[in-house]
Length: 267
Figure 1 (cartoon, helix red, strand yellow):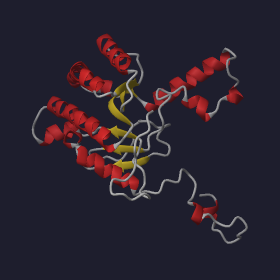
Figure 2 (tube, helix red, strand yellow; figure 1 turned 90 degrees about the vertical axis):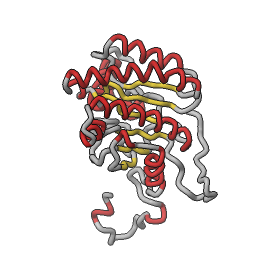
Figure 3 (cartoon, one colour; figure 1 turned 135 degrees about the vertical axis):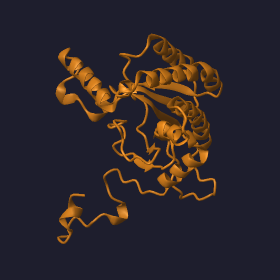
């Protein structure tokens, strides 16, 4: 991944860096349409326009990788007409935007299960990935037919198959080796996960990779999402103290102290 300049434009050398990998749960298309007495398909169409805005904004913010949750493995249970509309929009987006993304140096990656994906969409996905594979700009990772539990199970199955063949000893399976079997292999874990619409849950999205991601929940419905909302989430991220399970050096307790509360000892 090409390093980007994460310095603060205000000149503050001590400002927190910009998140290098931002993932977004794009939620609220249906509610956006319902509030306006429009069909859900119109909400999804406006959601595609928001995707275009956020891809442009991510590049301007110095973000190196943007992951978008476009279609979950559970979404197939939605009404057939809505699923058909979503598939149509996915086809249209790839066909109409691939050339533009490629010209901007965007590298497209798709994560999720291949089983059950319509053949023509699978072909478009492979075309998008192969055409942009050598690009050095923003990595646009799209989660399509994706569920984090399914991803983890598929990775565990790969590890089990390697162990059965004798290629790896079970005792040699590390977090790093397991992560390499995930769909996101080769991509750093997200620093920031944003969910729109005001809902506050991960909904089976990047459960392994998001273990230490900062979470930001915004009350804006996805079709209204714009560069200012992305910037707001980035500024919230930059205001936080990321500890990754540890504690700041200046706050570390004296290991010889006997009066450290039990809660702090096991924090």
